[in-house]
Image (cartoon, rainbow, N blue to C red; front, side, top):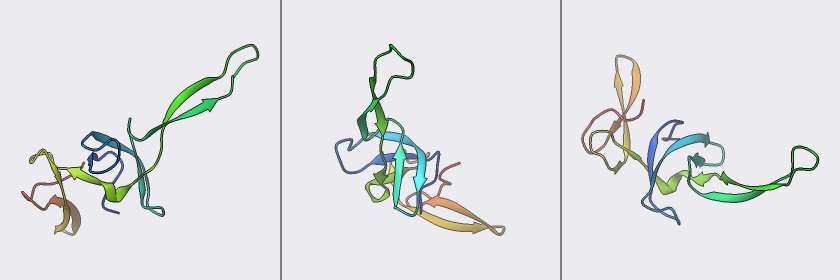
Amino acid sequence: MHIKKGDQVKILAGRDRGKTGTVLRVFPEQGKISIEGMNLHKKRAKPKAQGKKGETVLVPRPFPASRVAILCGSCKRGVRVGIRVEGGKKERVCKKCGALVGK
């Protein structure tokens, strides 16, 4: 999978289209990712102590990785990512400008 935890991504499709966020978790076997503050769904939580009320919390649900593009730090837009080998190490690079992408 070309997306890693901590990457800045832009959503290309869905109700949050056009928004950007940080990847919280990656599910490579399902081809999905979880993005901070995106694709939120309501979940009812039981009360933790007796006499308290239950509450409704917003939880980010996994999102298909094919619906996002990684943001390049120098281009400031969603781009495709390529791989370049430098000194025996693989690095992810922007296909538009050639700058390093990610961490």
